[in-house]
Length: 113
Image (cartoon, rainbow, N blue to C red; front, side, top):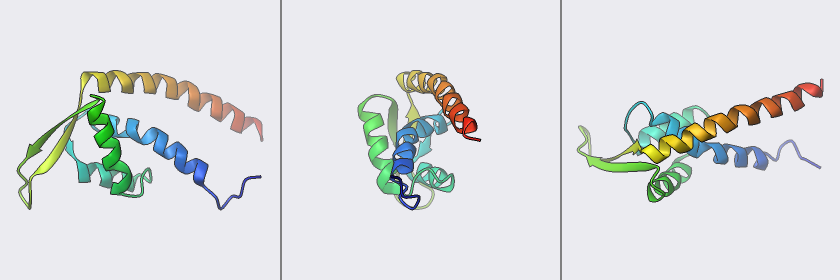
């Protein structure tokens, strides 16, 4: 039986969608790593850098994002991430599937009432 204090499955759900949230954040503009960490952290989707940087590395290796280094006005150069065409295609597919998934879950949760 589930222990309500044990939120492991919710954490797994968050991790599962975090990569697509990263791609979504990159659709409007290139962003540097810590900016992405901060934005996702403020949204409650990740707990810190230890989640985001490995995801960004994997997304880069798989060709979903590209990277470039830029000088920073305050401190060392920053690595910026931009979504690629294949990243946009993956995000579009996720968005179409997510709507169906969310609707199915909402229907089942609403049925309990």
